Structures are given as C-alpha cells and as structure tokens.
Length: 437
Image (cartoon, rainbow, N blue to C red; front, side, top):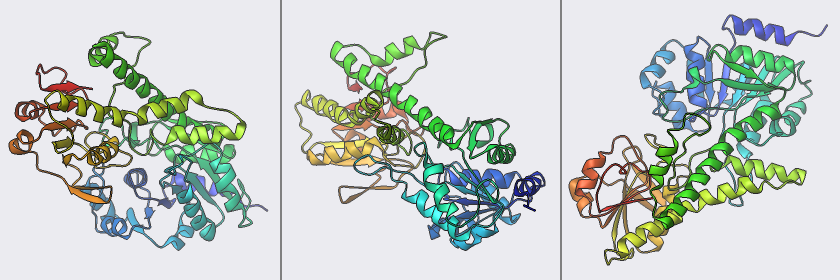
C-alpha cells in the first residue's frame, strides 16, 4: 500500500512539527527562515558562505531588515540555526530554494545556483519531502530543470516527493510590506503540492493565492517586475523629452498623480538596480525566443533603463561645462551606491556604471554611502568618504544617486557648489546650483 506522504506532512505542518530547510540565506532566504521560525517551526538554513552560517549560529543578523535580537531569540529557542553541511537536507520535511539567479554578460539566464541547489537536494532527498523553488526564474524552470534532476533518484513526483514554485516578494528596506503582510502565490506540479504549500504559507501570511501550475507562478513574478521595468522606462524616456522641452518632469508626474483613477506614479532615476528589475525582463525575453516570439516592447524598456547612467553623466558634463569646468580633473562626489534607498545592497546599481564612466573621463571621484563602506570598480577599491561640510564644499559637483533617508538634503544643497539630483529630492528647493534629472 502506497504511503500517503501528503497526509503525513500535512499533519506535521498542522502541529508545527515539520522541519524546514532553506537553501540560500540572503535577502530572500533569511527573512523567510526567520518568519517560519517566529511561527514556531524549526528552521535550518543552508549556505556555502561560512561567514553567514557562523554569524547566524552566533545570533547575529547581517541583513538590515532582520533584527539581531530576533535572531538571538530564535536561536536560543532552537528554532533557527544554519549549516554548510548539505547532507542534513535529508532531515528536513520542507526544503526551500532561495538562491540568486543573475544573468550573464550576454543577458542570458544564469540558473547555475538553482542547479547546484537541486544537485544537493538530489543527493540527499528522501520520501515525503516538499521542495519549493522561490528563486526568480523563467517559466518552465521548475518542471524542465529541477523536476528531471529529482526524478533521476527514482522517486516518483507528487507521490514520493512534492514540488512547487512560489515567487519571492521581498522588497529590501520596505518597512510597510514584509513577508507577514504580503500575499503569497504558489503553483505546484499538482493540486497536492499546491494545496500543501499553501497550507504551509498560511502560517506566515494570511493571504495565499493558488495558481494552476509552476509556470503560471514563475511568470507571475516576471510580470510583476517587468511591469515596473516598463513603467520606469516610460518616465525615464519622458524625462529625456522634458529636458529638451524645458519642462520639469517631476512637476508633471506630481500633477498627474492627483488623478484618483487610471494613473499610477512612477519616477525617473539614474537607472534600475537590484536583483529583480534589471534582470527579470531578460529572463522573460530569453524564454520567449524558444517560442519564436520577440518581446520587443519589454526589451526596449530594459534598454531605455540601461541608457540612464550615461544620460546622468551627460548632465554632469553639461553642468560642469556651464561653469567652465571639465569632468577631467573635477572633484565629483557621488551620494549613494546602493541600488535603492536605505539598504546596503549594491547589486546591479546604476551608480556602478556612472562611476565607471566618470573614472574613464578622468574625474577625481569619491563617494559616500552610509550603508556601504567600500566598492570595487574597474579594479580599484573606493572607501566611503565622510559626508561633511568640507567634503561637499570642496567638490566641483555632488551627484545625488540614491535618496537615502540619512541625507540632510537642505545641508547638502547649502554646502555644495553644484548638485546633479537624479532622484528629485531637491525639486522643492529653489537654487541655481541644483540641476534636476
């Protein structure tokens, strides 16, 4: 008689006796692990980074969104721990895959981390486990990449193991929407895995939306971020047009935002960054080619956003020229190298491209970021410069690349000779030395 593994695991989940393993303890994996641990589940995190493992086992958080006090409390209760011993995966009842999915230089998907995690699961899988992929990826990854690897063990899917996809919805630095109050979407290989995954997620968030397949759930995530990419590209292109027309784009968007229906405000900037918006449209367009379909609209939006760092540098150049200065030899202080405000993550930040072009142009470059102490660009390591009256006044141009809350904008304007503002934070300040994107 075939054992009913779904029923057995469902009962374990209901009693909070299910052991949960999380592969990848970064911005996605750690918050997920902490939230399940807070709900009373025993969670074991897996990561190849020994420093992360060591810090978590010492009760220390390395992610700003997670309080060290919470990690310490959960560690003392034996609800949260970490390891780099992947053989312990066989002890887990549920395994989440929360690893990075970057792209290559040719803008093709790099799912090597998913494959590596799946290899570890394959080597340690046992009957009755539920595997949930959370890493953002192209539609078909769960069924075309992960499933075949697990089937090589001889275990039968949806009978001896269950498999589903649930897109992560982590927004680093967002204090309003967290895992706890952000709805989850999940799609399994069958109703079994979908139902069981939804039941598990219900312990950390009250709203779980079930879709018909992993592909639908995978595409849901790409749609969410492609939507943002396209709309950001729209206002970025509008910003370029407004510059030529002599119209304040910030004023226009602010005015349009007063319409209570049919409009959602997006704001221009120096480009897009992070682990999602610059990457996800390329995952979708890459997969579309398999179906002889060209996602021209999506690719054009991504290209438009990629052009913004160069446009920022052109504004810096023009602004200095008006003061009879050149970029070559000018002291330029860049404020912010994170990909968004109030976080310590520089992945795919548009600031990196801006820095590269400024260095190539011969600028005497420095930066400040209260969250990131050093950055490596073009083989050089730069340390964050203290933001002082002297560092501002001695710079030929101060560039606001990230609008960190810690920045006192009025003082920055007061003490700077020239400001190029890419985030619109000075738009209410009337000053001849301020140049808006």
